[in-house]
Amino acid sequence: MRNRMLFIAFFFVLIAQVIAQKDRVIILSDIEADPDDTQSFVRLFLYANQIELKGLVATTSCWKQDSVEPESIKILIEAYGKVQPNLELHEKGYPTSEYLHQLVKSGLPKYGMTGVGKGQDSEGSDWIIQELEKKDNRPLWISIWGGANTLAQALFKIRETRTPAQTKKLIQKLRVYTISDQDDSGLWMRTNFPDLFYIVSPGDDYGSATWTGINNAVKGNDNSEISNSWLAENIQQDHGPLGALYPDVAWGVEGDTPAFLGLIPNGLNAAEHPEWGGWGGRYELYKPDFSKTKKGGSIVEIGPESRPIWTNAIDTYTPYIKKEYGRSFGRDTITFTGYKETLWRWRDDFQNDFAARMDWCYMSVDEANHPPVVVLGHPEEFTVKSGTTFSLDAFNSYDPDGDNLSFLWFHYPEVGSYHKTIEMGAENVHEVQVKAPKVSKKETAHFIVKVMDKGNPPITRYQRVIVTITP
Image (cartoon, rainbow, N blue to C red; front, top):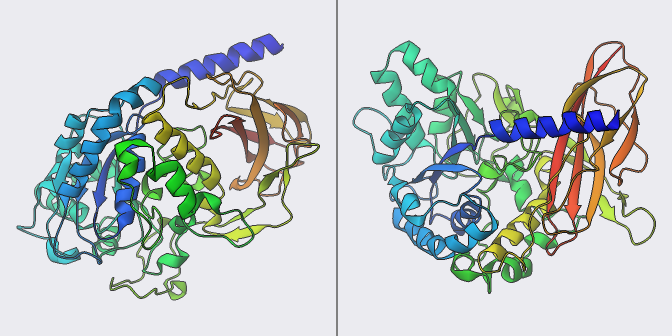
């Protein structure tokens, strides 16, 4: 029976590898408004083999209203080109610097809606339309790190020059993740294009936004991996020419990175399902109550949403901490609840992943660490009867460097329809026995396995298992 289940599991892994596709992405960045855009570009280029970059557009924002700086992107690409051959030794598929240079475009040097309308086209807005109209069935993600008016102009032109049917078809291919509203065109787009897939923490109170979980120093939590000393040791110094361009923090470290973190294929992220949670945070589809929207003091004009958007969701999270004796991991004594928790709960993992890839810039394959491969002993989705016991197993997971592996299984109660926590005993083993709860109607539960190697730095990969429980 076990051999049959393993065969089925390997079959599903094989199918997943065949159908896996990179997400295509266009970046809109107000680079030079804040050093964090440059920081985010450094990380982005390290994952350029795992997501398909289709545009790197310099834009304005409320912090940089009348100029754009595409040359700053080109400087980073030059540094990337010097380390690209070594990156390619560790994982295949890194684009050349020549290819990336072709993607650099500019939006108009105008702020917000003053740059949207007839005669306001730019090479950036036209580039978005050109990519959107290609014969490619994959969604096109627009990762917005500053102002959004370059995308707004593209949508304005599409609506003015295409038929309603053509416009609808193009809108259906778009996916937007924007780092709050950094000009007044975001609300305009969400109002005028009600079918546009849009992830945002609305308003101008950036301190309350989900994405700030990437750089929020949490009281009672270990925040060392966003410290200046950690960045200096693991990113900036002695890690090659790309790391040398990573600037010190001015406002908040890498505030734009969450806009693409959820697209990295790690077994946890599910880009089409923001409600499932991942490295970019967790978001739910609803119409937020404008009376509860906080104002943070920027100059962006905000207003009530006209329809549901993908926005802030709440997680209640108790961290697992390393233990010196007994089980290698155990739950901490402190629990956190909020929007930012949906993102910073994964912060140690994605920071270590970043540090490992920075090592790839100059280390040999034998010297550096590489991610483990998670292999389930069963399908990623299956159905069980209420009250029965079932197993979750990742025994056949392995590490390409031969590192020892640690396992951690947990139920993600905020995701799926069954919200009560399902316990599973000793969670830090490759196989756990789970008793399905008694239910009166069909429910779904999401279980996550974290597989961590013991390399330096340690790297984590995941697998999500969705279990349907029937009465």
